[in-house]
Image (cartoon, rainbow, N blue to C red; front, side):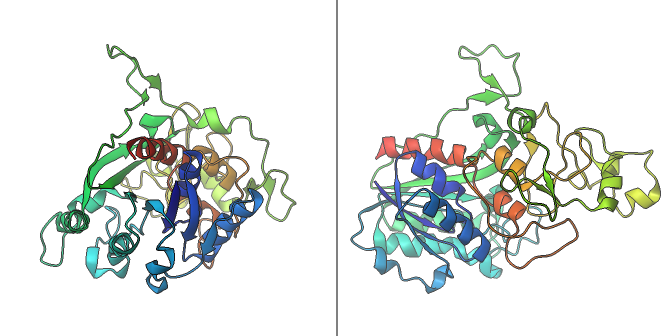
Length: 353
């Protein structure tokens, strides 16, 4: 079954869809670094997938007509709908990109569509100020094209991913919808009396404990993307944070260490825990190693996100206060869909088709 990937990022959805048995004939991604990471993955695996490093608005969907595309999938930019952003919705050009899914679907008419978004889309206001209006408009456009939609907010940790990450997934199929979202396989409540008990959550320790010590900035990498770029000042600040804690909550830390952090800054200067899933990996502040006084490396981010070890990120590694052109390695991972979750969803789509 052929698939087309749009808003591909570094390829989280792509890899999951591939593992489910689909053939991605092409991927479209604007960011140069993310596109290079995806190109490298296809090149090393000898895939024939074409990666278009273009603005999607400049791509004519007609070039994919006649390619027998069964599945159209992608995760449009979410900043316009994110609950932690300004939430400018359709007034933000990035919010309008959601409807590129409709433009492509109208031309290529795939049998199924898979879209990932932040859950803030559910309450995002349309241009008339109607709360939830953007999502209703999106579903009505799918309905106009003959698609029947199902949607669900999924916590990745409930499916074995070592990360508490809630995202909205929409699955629309043409004419009828026999798709069912997969049932959770994991839970943090092990005392319930369910007939089929769920597995305990996967943890950060489960996936990163066997990695060697990372190489330092400037040294030759021994393990791809496993590099420590933590500045000495940040290492000092990290040393005050206990496993699973955050710096703003440390009452004994000096004022020059706490600086401008407030009680609300629970995700800034935060350590992960070996015995818990990570909080949602984000494109802003990098989370810390559970016990070492350093940032998590991009490779550790990839492990937490369930990318295969064969996957290599292309592009710079950014320190907390630094800046780089295009997406750095940590942000590429944080912006993507966990491949293991994408695979589960794609298998159910394939079953429905």
